[in-house]
Length: 399
Image 1 (cartoon, rainbow, N blue to C red):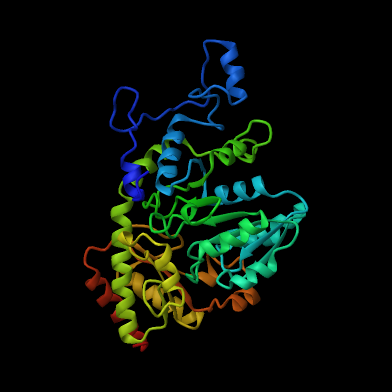
Image 2: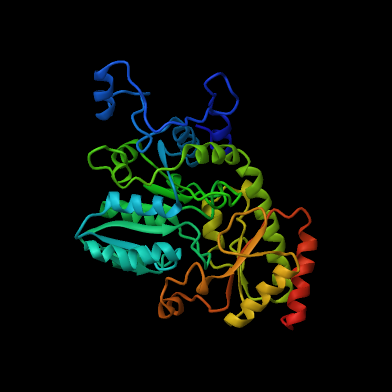
C-alpha cells in the first residue's frame, strides 16, 4: 500500500456500469435475486458482491466508502447521512449500558452534548479530560472504560492529540480509541498512529462545497461488518444511511481534496504569520509558538500542510461579533457555522458550534468568550484577503 493517502485514492479502479469514468449512481432502495438462496446468504453476510437493501449497502455508497478507506489506510469504511450520525453510530456500537468513556473535554459541541446529556439516559458515563495531558488520560481509565474518544485537532481550540501515546494507553487497557479526523483529512492518518475507529463529518473538508451533510466511519472489516449486521448492527438498526446521489457527488469532490488541503493550509499559514507580525492573539498549530506544534509534526503528512483552521481570540463576545460583521462586509468571507468551504467561514464558537458546552465548562477548557473559529478558504490572492482583515482590525483599534 502506498504511503501517500491521495495516491491510494487515485489508484482505485472504480468504473461505472458501462465503463463510465465516473462510477454509476445506483438509484435503488432494494435489489433483486435470481435465486432465493442468494437472498438468504446475503442476509447472513455470506454472498460477496451482492446487495440487499440500501440501508445496509448501496453500490454508490460502497464506492465512496472504499475510497475513504483507501485514503485513511483502513481495511473498510461505511458512510452516513451526517457527521453526528457517524460519531453516535460508532460510539453506540462499542458502548452499552454500564460502560465508561474517556473523552477530550475540548470537542465539537454536538459531540459534547451527546456525551454529556444523551448517553447518561442509557447509563453510559463519560469523563472529560485535557487530552494533551497523557497522565490525566491514564488517571481517568476505569475498569469499565470501553473507549477513549478524541479529535486529532480539537474543535475549536485546535489542540493536537498525540495519538501514539493515547493509543498506547488504550492498548494497555484493552479499550478502543475513536478519533474524529474532520479537521485534518490527509494531513493525519489516525489509523496509522493507533486509532481503532476514525470518524468524519464529510460535510466539511472532504466534500468541501457545503452543499450536503454527510459522515463516515473508517475501521477494520470486522468493525464495519458489526456495524451493518442485520440483527444487531447499530448502523443497520438506527439507519443513518447516506443517499447514493450524495455519495456519488462526494466521491468526485474527494479527488480534489489533496489540492484543496494544500491551498487551505498555505492560506492559513500565510494569515497566521501576518497575525503574529501584528501581535494579534490567535492560535494556529502550524507555528512553532503553538504548544502542540512538535507533536503535530510527528504525525502529519507534511505535503498537505498544517490545515486550514485558525482560532482568533478577540477576548470579548462583542468584539468577536464586531470583527466578524466587519469581515463579512469587507468580503473576507461569511459569518456562518461549519468549515472546510471554498470561502472563508468564521463564527464565535462559544455562541454557536460550542454553545452546547456549559459556560463554566467553556471556561475550564480555556474557551474564551471572544474566540472566533476561522476556517480559511481557497482564496487565490491571500495577500488581498489579509489586507481586508487588517483594515477591519485597524478600524476596530486592535492593531
